[in-house]
Amino acid sequence: MNTDIDEEIFEYLSLHLNPKRLEHSYNVANLAVLLAEKNGVNALKAWLAGLLHDCAKSMTDKELVKFFKNRKKNFKYFKEISANSPHLLHSFAGEIIAREYFKIKDESVLKAIKYHTLGRENMSILERLIFVSDSISHDRKWKHAGALREMAKENLNKAFFEVLVQKIAYVIRNSGWLCPQTIDTWNWYVSNVKKN
Image 1 (cartoon, one colour):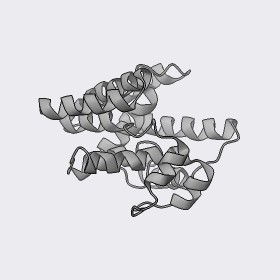
Image 2 (image 1 turned 180 degrees about the horizontal axis):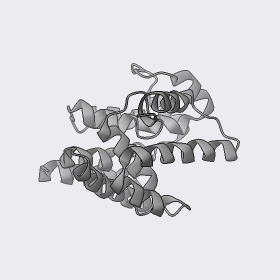
Image 3 (image 1 turned 90 degrees about the vertical axis):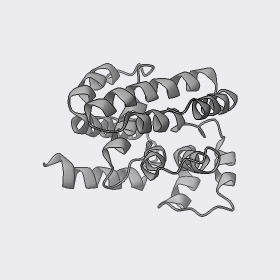
């Protein structure tokens, strides 16, 4: 990786994320590289997407909604997310920060950042491995994280499905708002990937 961009990213993340979130970003990047190597994906792209996936995570709900006030909302469900769970906008804001601030031009990296929280229909391998790495990185201590880390090393699609199940179950268990985009992700995956 270009050491200048690495330093620039570290400086930005150090200023904008608390130490725990900064550590999480590095853990996601490290796991993403491991999974990329096992799945024939460019490891440098995985590293970059992993580092930047939460670059907007420290923004408050109000800041996230304001961030999009004068910007094109090039994703579905903006109004619903803003009204019901604005913290979910961080992944979409992160993609814009990566594009505008860091001048990232690689669409595969940008999409991996953009969809790491809610997923989308027809996700690339890089997108899926960032989605998975975010939920099961080594700093994640929830009940199934360790087992899913091992599963992801053997079968990324199976781990992706299980992470998606856990995310949906978590929202339902906590009586939260389930974003329609996550439902779209589920339905596409079950219809097109899981049965294969």
